[in-house]
Length: 314
Image (cartoon, rainbow, N blue to C red):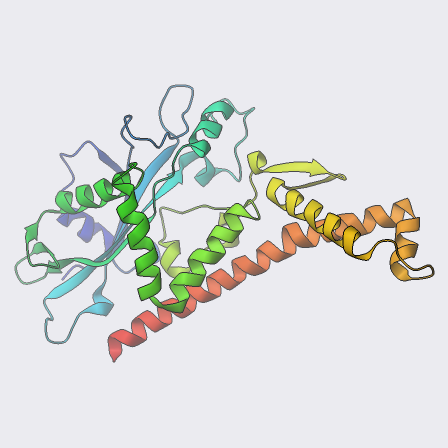
């Protein structure tokens, strides 16, 4: 039986492999590790790069020896739960990109990376198993594979997700899996997309923990410099400013002109009060609402995990 992350890593026999590098033992799993691999140059996704041309964005695979999910009728088969996602090496060590820092990727390469098609984060909860009696890895179909085979297959699927045609398969499977994997999966993805595209928030991964399974710390929830702009002395997300302006235009159209001697008319009669209320409304829209959605997403991740393990017991 594998008892810790190092023992699991040893079973993958990665010593002679040059493409997967920098393994890290997970701190939130009894036995698990993460490992990195660079993206091929020829794919549509373009990672940000440092001045020495090394990539900042890398693919990270999390691998967990999931002893909690052993089936009573097959006690020798332990599921190997895997996940792959894109990570920024620089942002893993800093809150945001600092383009004045000579160690930071260039602004042009970050913008080019953000504009290129983004690889899908993919989960493989029950695709692979470890037979503790025979000390071999198996696919769910029973085919014997090596640890390198598992990592290569996961990485290949991740890279294919940005292919113009092969990527359609992963978009379809993502929608299908969301529908099949319950209310929680649907709303977690919906909230994450809302935070990214409406509120301009980035949720960074951590190679020491599998946050997508256990929940994200507040330090992973970021409003990046490239996604924000200053207005009325306050730095807000560019997307939120657009929403704010549309809301102001809508309210003005629907409710102006105002009756005299009302609170709203008093506010509009004073430039100071108008500015204060505008900034306050902007802060609520740009800070409080995204934070509440982030908290709700973590709550749903927690409930999904509880449901996941409760179904295994039944």
